[in-house]
Structures are given as C-alpha cells and as structure tokens.
Length: 196
Image 1 (cartoon, one colour):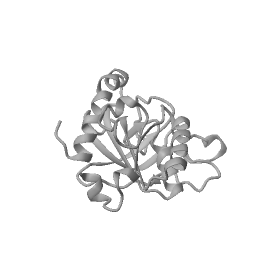
Image 2 (cartoon, rainbow, N blue to C red):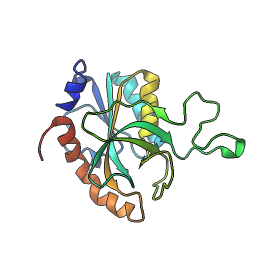
Image 3 (cartoon, one colour):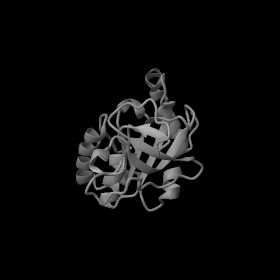
Image 4 (tube, one colour):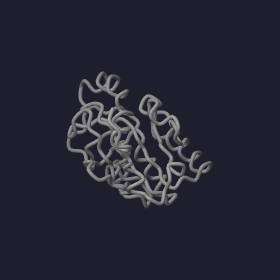
C-alpha cells in the first residue's frame, strides 16, 4: 500500500482520513479512521481540531474533490502548497491572499508528495469558484488550506489528494455532482494499489 510504504512508522490506526463529504469516501474508507467536516473552511477547522484533540493522529490525509483548469477530470493530484484564495485585504495595503498580522505565508507549504502523482497548488475558499485565471494555484476546493494549516501548527505530517471532478468552468456544478461519487474508487486505486 502506498501510504505504508511512504510512512512505514505510521499505522493505518494512527492515520486520520479527512473528507468534506461522505460522498467523497463512499464505502471504501468505512473501516478506517475518518472525519467528515462538512463544506467550507469554518466547518473543516472545527471538525479537524476536535478530531486531532480526540485522536492525536500521526498522519492526516485529506481526500476530496476539486476543480482544475490544468488537470483533467478523473485525475488524482497531490497538493503540497495551499493558498487561502478568498483572503483579500488589499484595501488596507496587504498583498492579495495575505492574512494580515499573521506569520502564515501566502503560499503555505505543508504537504507530503506521493510518488507517481502530479503535484498541485490548492486554492481554498468559501465559494464554488468557476474561473481562476492567473491565480497562484491550479486546483480549487473549499477546505484544504485550513486542514494543512492545522496539521502544520500541530506538527502532524499531511497528505492532500484531490480528485479532479470538474474544470472549474461554466459546467463545474453539473460535472461535480456526477464526478464526486467516483472519487473514492480513484483514491482506493492510488492509496491501496487496488484495481476497481
């Protein structure tokens, strides 16, 4: 299995799998430690913080669906960099995406690469984005940034895999509702090297 090969000192019992929605996990992860956060950064922050306090995992693995104009539908991309795409305090002289009076960099680096997967930068925000043009990220979701930040602050290794469900364009909502149910099988193939 990919995870036990990459993290030989961490058992599945010490790994916490984090999803926004149960639809992204299907039945594949039913016997593993999972937490379903709900949609958005606030829900994700609350749910993961509680789970970390309760379980003290040695590895956090975020699995979920995302949009991308760079990667194709059905691809699994490993995110190792994160941007809070809806942070905008430029009116007060701060850079776009910069959190004022914080030591957190605009481009948060806290993700472990997984061999054989393309690497991406995930822009998280509390909106369903359908156009990100020249943004400093190539994948969009609604939770990963805060999950990576909590893992970093807690000193816990973090793996973030995104199943590309849509192209973050005009048909994104329709594509997402069809594709999201395929995510669990794609994650199973990547993480557990099991064919569908």
